[in-house]
Length: 327
Image (tube, rainbow, N blue to C red; front, side):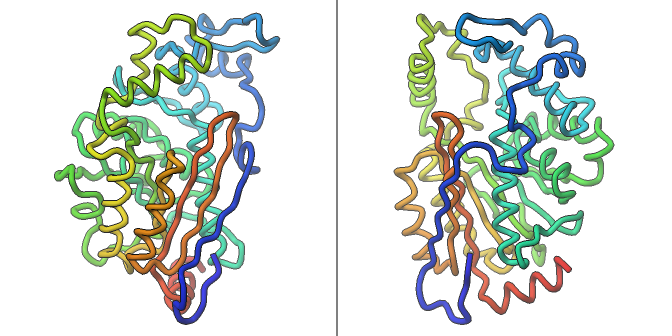
């Protein structure tokens, strides 16, 4: 994200990337022999099908997916104890890792192409979830410190249990309750507090009905002949998957609030699942007088998502921040 000494116009830089990020640990197909060694309970769910010579699991079976995630996190990230309550979102680990690595690259643009690493680098995860996956990946990959926020006590209890049960997370990840579900940064970022970056995977549906329709379409696209109610129960509490106004409204609120914390945070970022929302996102950031915007288009199979990052800091402020916190 290049910059100029005075903000004369609005920067938008786009990168289109296919497949996994080069530093992503999940470049290859799942090694189920190794994964079942990590979590033997996964073994009964592994099978072969007619379409592929490689073993697989039923990705519509929530229990199988949870055990797969547990094995992945143990094998690749040293997480010995991981679990989430029934009904909570069980995220695809490779995609989550992609976001972390791409946002790390954006930070490196401001630091002579060297990724800032170590516990002094502080990341705010908006909507940390019961699974605590982003802090797990960020800690392992770059040794960053994390603050994770969420809006329900049950979610935070689950995330805290994961932190407490794994020594590589203890005292490295702090959780904060967002008491007002209508706020995002307000009430979470403390006065005078500094964050090097923020990340967010916002709820992308506007209602439960919309979420169910989207999942039904996904099932049909994957040629699931007769998806039943059990198949539609894909995991994820409503506050994880949908919010009033959907992704558009959530990101709009995030941008509006980010202005207030323009000097508290070096880089704000969010995932944008719907490409149609990008035009509005850019317009809002220009109106908010963001100094520059970086967009990364990430393609994994048939899925395309975007990571948008922005900063309000001038070139002089960027240099001062990097010198003070990253060297």
